[in-house]
Length: 194
Image (cartoon, rainbow, N blue to C red; front, side, top):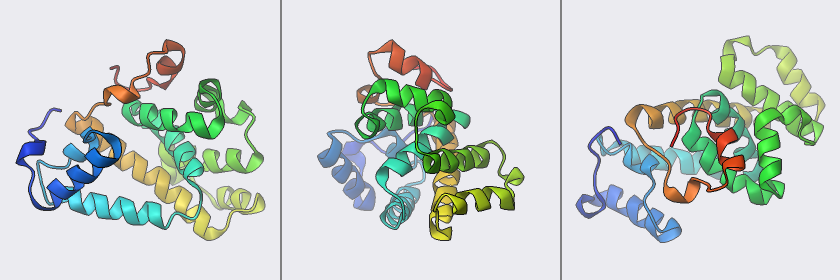
């Protein structure tokens, strides 16, 4: 971490509560949480926001992870690629399936609906100013509601913000997310190397 953050034994108030929740759920406090603490008022705001966004997300956790993986590739964010790549192994069935999606989701054997969702997320991440009515029409044609389209846009856009923030503050992946398998880890190393 490039910035001075609040250590676990120094945390008070909501920061301490958030740290305690992460430690009880994962066994550690994520660098992502710590990265907000040079301004301690930000961590509770970020935590409340992400809890509300994910809590109201109209698509499944698999879709959240897929969108995030593709957005992270184009930010580029190795940290987020590692975290969500690991989480997608269970969703997609294998490391090879995750790598196939990350390398080219259009040829990875996904459903047409998934491909359209990820094409939209990819365009948002690369250059949202080029989104047209045509993108929305294609999403509607494969069955997405406007609420779901809004959520895809929110998920991809949110990842652009937080991934860049994490890299800018020096947050790096925890050891649990750095896979020993080079055939899995290397394709997910899209930005910084760890």
